[in-house]
Length: 201
Image (tube, rainbow, N blue to C red; front, side):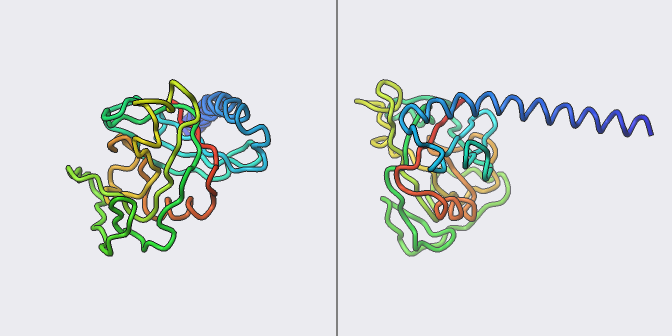
C-alpha cells in the first residue's frame, strides 16, 4: 500500500513540475504576444513549444486546447534554405485549404485532387507532403523571423497536416510545424487570420 502511495505521489510531483515549467514558458510567451497584441485576451493565441513538441491554443490567458506536433529535424534556425524551425512571434497570414478533404495533398498551396497515404508507424519519407490544411505564418520580429534571408513568410513556414503521422511528437519536419490531419483541421476551424503564434524553444 505504501509503495502505491509513493508511486502516486512521485507521479503527481513530476506532473506538477511539468506544469510549472510550462507556466513559466507560457508567461514569457504571453508577454511577447501582448507587446504586439495588447488585447490578446480577445484572441486565441497559439504557443508552440519545441522542447515539448506541443502546440497550445490559449483562451483568456490559459490553455484551451493542446496538440502534439513535429518541428524541424534539423533544429532551430531562421535562415532561408536551412530547413530549420524559426523562433519568435508570428501571425497567421493566410489560411489555405478550407474545403480540402482529410489527407488531401496540397502542392504550391493548391489541392491536387489526390489523397495521401497516411503512415502511422515510423515511416520517414524523403518527400515532405503538405496535407489537409495550411496556416501560413508571417514573422513579426525584425532580425529574428522578419527581414532579408530570414523571413518566415518567404521561407514558407506553415502549420500543416502530414502523411507521416507516426512521426508526430518527434522533430521530423523540414522547418514547418506538422500536425495530425484531424488536429490541423480542428485547429484551422478555431483560429482566424492574424492570430498570433509564438514559437519557443
